[in-house]
Image 1 (tube, each protein chain N blue to C red):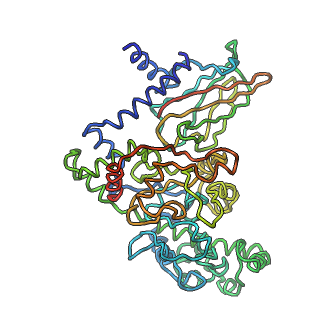
Image 2: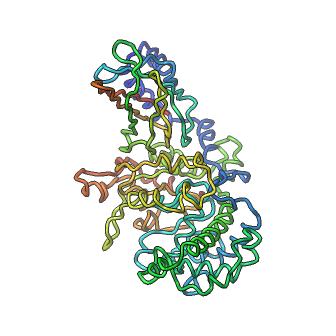
Image 3: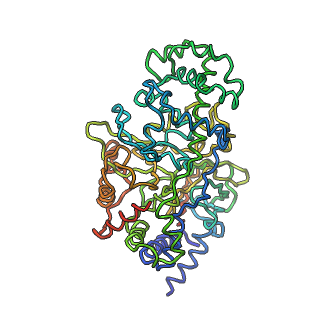
Length: 403
Length: 128
């Protein structure tokens, strides 16, 4: 067949498909809704890079580490400090540590194991390697790597010995080390360089085990089932049993609003990275998003292909074939899950959009964003302006509030 | 109605199953690519490998060609979510590895082929 014809037909057929999305009948809309529902038995894929994933003893250790404020320089900062609000796994934005930390909003932990890349810019490719970052970050836990190794041996030596017998040996050698880290202050980096390679390896092994235990715990935290899940289940395919504003909002979400283009599936995320033209934070440099981290990720000793990973090379396709292309990285950020979205805020990677209504207005107006002019083009944003009535916006918010 | 009938044929032969389509000519007419990609079997977000063959303008296998893969979604202004690579299987047969489509919608895929004096680009467009 002639391909120019095929190209024309592709456009024609896709156009028909989109038009149909606007006029789905009741049965179709409920069938579509089923694709956005999480069930109690939903589980993320196992992480082959973490041999401790699914290990109950590691999960128990990880839970203790997650809630332990002693795992920090000030003795008052735990993972839970920013990832738990009022006893629930809801991001807590009340603590604005330093400027660098405040530059990004907190991401949810429950359900995070469904992702392939982690943090807003995808700078890590496993839950365990992500968990290591805040431990050493000066604006978060602020510990050095040697302090982490010594602390976990002191506090959790028995549990660590049960998981990795060799790691808990000769603990006294580690307790006497100065604060040292390859990414810390100048003094910490110099102290790290002064350590012999065998000691550095030992510290790294304990550091990695800490991250893998925390990740094992986090991976066992499913995203909570939502009002939306319940409504769709109870409707049993009958759209008349759904709250009509919620159903209309879902129609906007999957149609006019084009939200489901990226916020797809039961997690409401395609797991991919997009530039949506979000403005820079006033007084802050333009955030380069994934472009700033994709190179370091490929070089990181803690990535899927690195010496601390338990994965086979064939398990690391997402890293092996990662795109470095400008349009895939410049100012792009990971599509966040929308589960529990109404419980958190502000929105966007640095909290630039204070409310869900502000988010919707951003997508409707589709500003050019700050990244295009950096490379001499109009925009790098994928957004196109939308037409949406006030009623549609209200319905969309009603839908989002059920997630 | 004729347009709809043609559209249906096009959907069957050209869009839902690229493996059933005839080889596609490059922009310069120097290369023809036959892509074994069954769109109906493509799972969004999963890695796939796509075998293909290359022939020259006289219909002979194009061997030892250098082939790069690019593409994306024009409507969304972004390229492929990954950086696929092409492996040469010999005798004009090749395979794309590391290819993934991150969402439903209209996708474009381009094979840029270089072999001796032959330089051509073969484009595919399909909807997931």
